[in-house]
Amino acid sequence: MDQDIVSTPAGLRIIPLGGLGEIGLNMALFEYGDDIIVVDFGLMFPEPHMLGIDLVIPDIAYLRERAEKVRGIFLTHGHEDHIGALPFVLQELSPPLYGTALTLGFVREKLKEFDLDGLVDLEVVKPREKVAAGCFEVEFIRVSHSIVDGCALAIRTPEGVVIHTGDFKIDHTPVDG
Image (cartoon, rainbow, N blue to C red; front, side, top):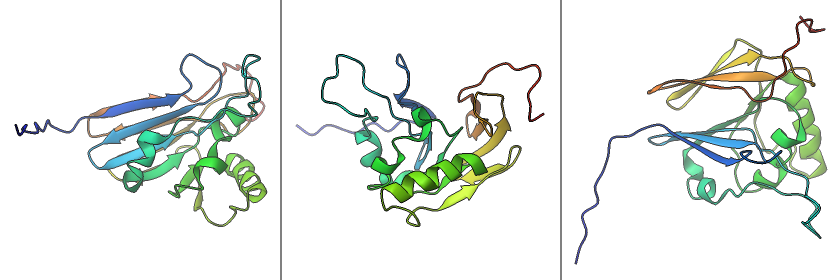
């Protein structure tokens, strides 16, 4: 018996592939129609019960199946739990990467270690700048953190604005203003 496929109106999907319920593995997808953006690509260092495991990276099976829809990877800051999985994932996917100068400096060095330097488009974005990526517009917003050049993201979607904080700390006297 044939089944009819019911199509529903496009809606915003926010899909965490890591970073919930654990420290590390920070990665989230924002999907609307034929457009996907990714926020962060972090790793996690193994817990004591994970014998023989050096690094834990997010499961990207969902993303791998939709690779042609990925419009960009947006990085909130340069900690390993937000950029550490990039060399493993960028062997399969190669969308442009967007981040602040320091964050992309760390990424560039990491990619050199894996002989991936020059294979990925690294786009430096300053706080308050906006980037169009498919139906999304992403604005970088400076935040205080234990690493400089960290940003939250204001992600404008057809459904409204989503604020992704990355990591932050409240610092009443930040050294960088």
